[in-house]
Image 1 (cartoon, protein in one colour):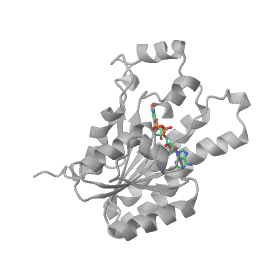
Image 2 (tube, rainbow, N blue to C red):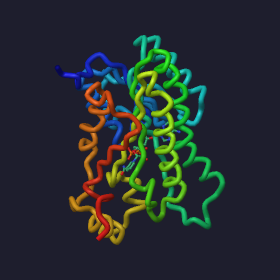
Image 3 (spheres, rainbow, N blue to C red):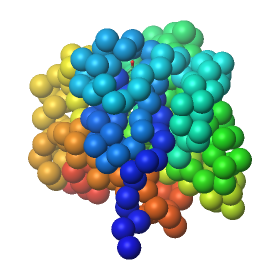
Length: 250
Ligand SMILES: NC(=O)c1ccc[n+]([C@@H]2O[C@H](COP(=O)([O-])OP(=O)(O)OC[C@H]3O[C@@H](n4cnc5c(N)ncnc54)[C@H](O)[C@@H]3O)[C@@H](O)[C@H]2O)c1
């Protein structure tokens, strides 16, 4: 029995125009999933990120509940149901702690935590009604123990973990699974410019048994597994893909 088959499933991927979730969206598309990307970046940027024409695009600010509701309506109208939600939209800032503004707290907490909560609330409501669904939230190795230079982000990703477990508990009886993916370091052009200078890069790689950064395609296997019935007894779990970063001290 191949219970890893995903063909014909319906998925929404927030942040799907980004470094990691564009690759994940393409992989789901190749697996026969009907994927819609939800992102603020605009369709042109999403296509430049490599999204094929077979992947749908809807503009969505994940911090606005009305955007989630509008996207849910469009996906349900087109496909009749929602099997998978990936909450991949994210934002970070390297501001020193004493200088962080209220506006920055709102933005970083908003995209990472509130955006995930609203996605779970709006799409999860449909899944609970369907009595079927899988949600994959993005946390990070910075969720704990926290990383330097990422104060609000680390707190937000820690909140995402807590929410993931809480919803897993809440919705397991309704056959809706909620899990988290915990990537290590998969640098983007932005993070290489704002977060990872040569010194930090050396520290990270010295602390990563694999001795290198991750490539976006190295998250695909975990996503396909969590999305499919191959993980039907897995909920409230955290799948770490970090080259061993969290497995070592010295
Ligand atoms: N890249 C890494 O090393 C890494 C490590 C751990 C966790 N993560 C997490 O993985 C996820 C994807 O990260 P990435 O590296 O692809 O980042 P990325 O910056 O390339 O992509 C993030 C996407 O989120 C979108 N976005 C930002 N604000 C939004 C909003 N308000 N509404 C809708 N979309 C919005 C952006 O337009 C972008 O397309 C994020 O949740 C991130 O925190 C990344």
